[in-house]
Image 1: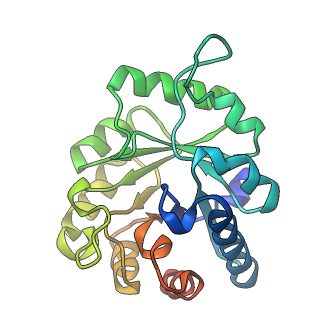
Image 2 (image 1 turned 90 degrees about the vertical axis):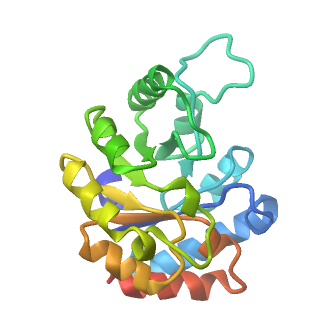
Length: 225
């Protein structure tokens, strides 16, 4: 069931905590993604903030991811994010080690392990091809390649500025599906990334800050087909 929900290429919008993607606005944005997924048949997921996670999983049937989990099981862990609780709230997976939430290698390994035990799909974020190669050995379900200096950019992207790094990352990912992010802001970025071997996208700004999120999302999905 989960595999069919995460068919590739997959588009995942990271809501972060952008103003237009939090609380009621976040719920509205989630419903837009569901509407587009249902009308196009595209594989679409979303990663809302942890406070909004349960509200959104209750309202939509598309895959919902947490933005982070900690490497813990039940116990005395005040302030941490328990992978099993994320699963029980209805999420299908989680991001780990996003550029805005980097964690040390040993902590990262614990997070991957605990997330796997909780039945979560694990998207491990890497900043460069060398990290992609190192992280592939940890056997996550996806690797998201995002050069940090391009995250949030509206005029540059990894596809336009560093296309060779996408190709290099695909080669060293050892068969693990590679998602591309960091400044993806045009359908052309999508086409280039897919031609270079990417199997999906992890994007925030191009959707969460768009004047018309539905129109923007549809334009990217057209390029994915």
